[in-house]
Length: 73
Image (tube, rainbow, N blue to C red; front, side, top):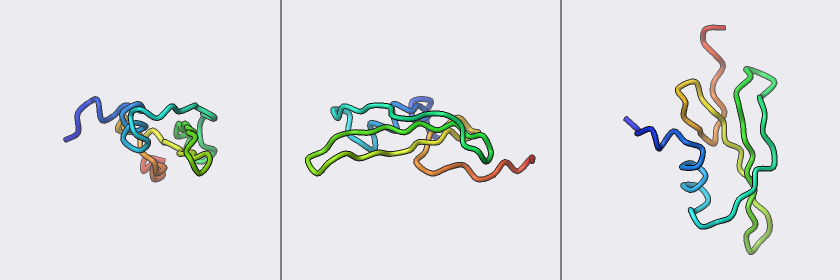
């Protein structure tokens, strides 16, 4: 089982983009379908800008893939 730290958005951003890479939040909100929270972070690299979307899942973890529809709906 993953620890609480692995749940955090900061942990996931550092995992995917390296801890020393400056990032900027460029968008955040809720998806239209399902209402899942999302955050878009952007970083500048030698070849241009890169952006990643992170989605908050029902278990509290942030991932780069959106959650599957809510089975209770």
